[in-house]
Image (cartoon, rainbow, N blue to C red; front, side, top):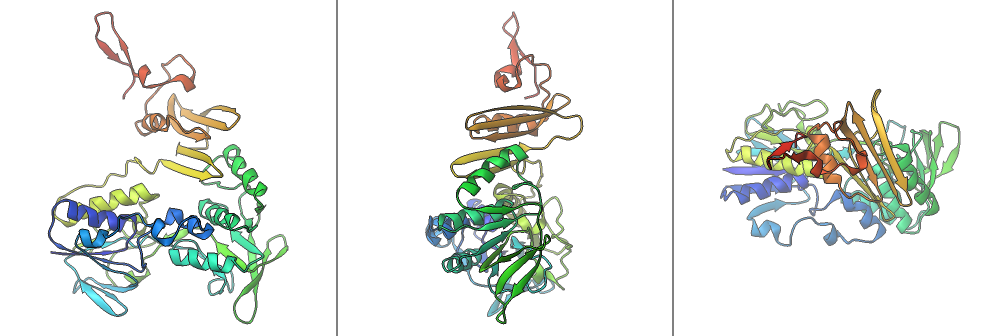
Length: 410
């Protein structure tokens, strides 16, 4: 049996490891457009110079050799032939018995005339993007970032560490609007500004000006303001990297359609990670890679998206950690419980006595406790004490006869 995995990210590497961990002696081939296996979460540290390419790796040295995995780096897949079970790329092809598509996602480039082909405009999704941003930034005085989400601020943080002062343009009225509430986000806003970053909130890039060589020289905001630009970083979202599936017969719209075993409609073809639209973070991609691999080697295993990992979101800038679990903004009827002091901000949202979300900033201790309550929808309304003093000890009482009585559904 021959397994071909497209992609050397979290899902792809997890799948390869799982096949070998089960003692499977089948052939395993990883085809990757990248020249190394690296953590995308750490790309901003490469921009800043804090980490080398080798230090971005999330696999041990000689991983491929020790696990008897044949790796084909720098190979961009152009087509999947499901009829003859073959993956094609420039310079060759690979046949397969089982195929896993774990190609991740690509940066979305807004439909602004001239932006897609601009020579000094980059997303931040791949190591090649980080290289170009770092190299271009070395000679750039006017750096603009579109998007104040996590990717945009990762880029800004890396550039600040280079001694640059980027301008971040964001349509929303706050930064990190998909990750934190206004209060928690404001802490980072102040820190970024103190470090030299400038924000244009409630603003939109309507157009760009370019020279004859396709180099962006200025951006035009919806307010009419024109800002000089030597380097433009685009952080406006991602979409699955599956353009090569055209005419493959594999069902997809925006994402690849998979069943509960992460199998596609094509015989022997599976998908995991961002390519499926099911993955919101690294741990979920790892889990999906493992589940897909088990099914590929004949161990039927269902994937349950029970939010074990996707509930969590972590941020860490300027030495300030933040963690959210579940909802960070209340819905109608929800109750917010907040407390803050110097260096700490915390909020728990409850709905009919059940915690549905928490923000922990500065001090993220007990995050596992809150994750457990939220994930399992445990009602704590029967506990007559401050919500901040609730603990696992409140899950039971001891009766007069020494019998444990469970109070909460833990």
